[in-house]
Length: 432
Ligand SMILES: *Cc1c(COP(=O)(O)O)cnc(C)c1O
Image (cartoon, rainbow, N blue to C red; front, side, top):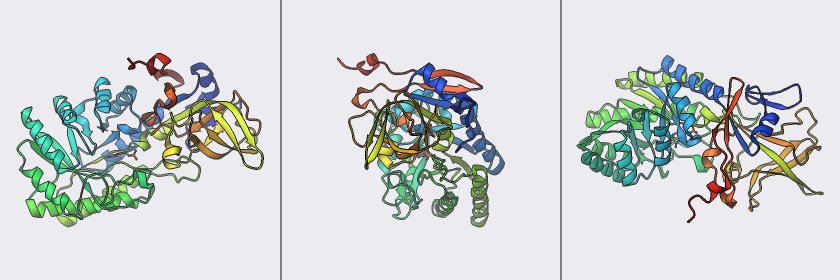
């Protein structure tokens, strides 16, 4: 199995976090998101422990909330000693309501409105990650109104192509995010930030992409960013206290995806940082990293009930489920790969091939094409799609006015609802 929180029990059912998924589907109905809290904690600890071993004092990992955002997640992240990043007032509000200390939060987004900035300063956000000069000036002005000196990082574009999907690639010079080193804009915005009365420049940030497997990517970006830090020291006499290297470590969606040793990767990045700082005679910055996917992806699994099955002889086969692109748009968006099983028939031979499709009025509403399944698959069976903890619930929609599934958290053999299933009344709650 692709993650050790999966197994097959004595009934031939798929077990997740030690619990029978077929029983969970019966109890909580489908579609259903499951989240394995113990796995989230395990993933957090890998980062927290590696950070304390390899990086300078005051370094810490932060969870990128956009991967999966609801109140319970922030409670866990807080208990595990991580910070968080938020990209909107919705995420920030969720964190606030979960009691997350906002001084350990970083506010991202390539376009923060004046209202966003005002709200964040009012709630004492720790850092803004500033994307552009327009935004920098706006934050300075709004901070002045609040009589505060606002801490910020500047988002820098290092000019790296991490060889992942185009849509999640954010580190190239022509990216919509950040200020590029190559064009001189990164240097210019640093000069501006250092002069502003109500801004405290606390360092630099970069994020080059997502679902990154090659260990070289973070080393290359650390290298470029430390050279930039050295250049800023030479030009302005400014030594950056914080270097935030972004998120992006990949996870296993299928058996073909490699296993990443995060601890080892972080030790390699740290080795590079120490070497460069010594070479350039700059103080070791505090390091921040922003994992999202690698914290929650393998802690999630989605259950569906099979509806109709369509066999089109000599063409293809379809297995329809009671969810789809509304709860998991990733195949529709990126052609993402997933592993899926008939959860109640784990020991049967997979002698049939079908596309698992959703119930929306879109031909592109596909969870996965050409999935090997038992030919006995029938209406009423339970389908499990693995590794859905990241960018599923957070990207879900009400297209076709489908209510969103609930999230049931599993821990220590117990299960409980942490996000309720939407009702038909929820669907019309804002209609007048
Ligand atoms: C999306 C994002 C992350 C998290 O990326 P993962 O691939 O989920 O680890 C971190 N930082 C920024 C700025 C992002 O946009």
